[in-house]
Image 1 (tube, rainbow, N blue to C red):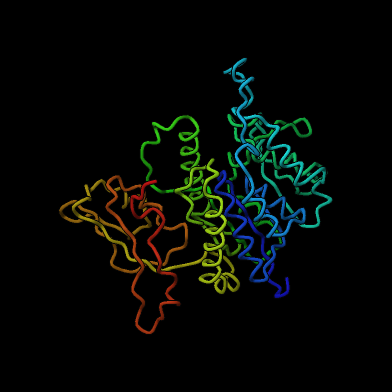
Image 2 (cartoon, helix red, strand yellow):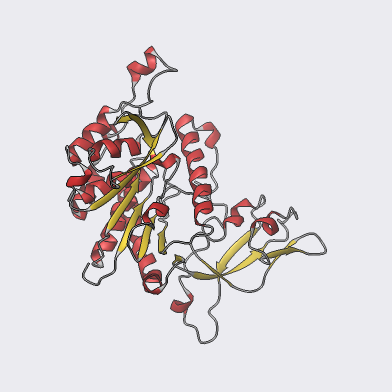
Length: 376
């Protein structure tokens, strides 16, 4: 990179919502930023591998806009009819394998001109395998990416070197911990898998929708747990607003790419300066004020138990009261809000302190992820 900023880019899984990664790459490229390392899971592995193999961002965008459902998902009707409980997957492997072959051919990790690591999970041992690390570079990138995308129940496991591998999202949907071990100043992580948005009627939508929603819940919990005490290098956490898009939808491609660009550009604008000079922490930061709707509050005390000490207390009437002091939040702060059973808690941008400009106070557009019971 021309300006000497050395960072690792982490691209998470999230089904077709991961097409937002293409927009994220465009936002970085426009600012002259190129990652020293790329680490990906599932569709993040696919987008990262294509970039590492030499595809330009413009070519990736053309690919994203042209991809169709039959290029990835074709029902394995014959297998399901013959052995409904023993079929290796709901979908045939061949369409996705052909797509990957067309993109990556037979290239191995050792032959890539850009550094790439792809996460997958050994189905039998539960071991996370990070293809592309030393000793794990002489395998075909296409095989490793298929393994990283092989969501159990949807695609058959991928065999590599005597192991049977499945989607890396099962254990590490956003591999920031692995990326933190690289010799970099900071990380840029793009999360498209987690979602705290309240949904409706999922129980009526069939297996795929129920499984996708269950995956989102797991990804959210994993992310919050992993980042609660983040001690790695400074991280810019980009969370495109793609929660309303179904995980396997092909009807939002242009929107996904554009939202990945918007979210990454906004995060860089708000947090890049802090990211470059900070030894650690998660950015961008913002100041918020908490409010409790007393009419909704039932006094269960979940907020007192789950929020940082001193954030809430219960008053004489048994109602929750939020601290009046503004708080500085990172993108992973405030997870306790979505655990309020009556949605009584909201977070809003804090008013700038005297002498502090709105820009210095941080971004003010919108509330915290999950502060209101949005539906999709």
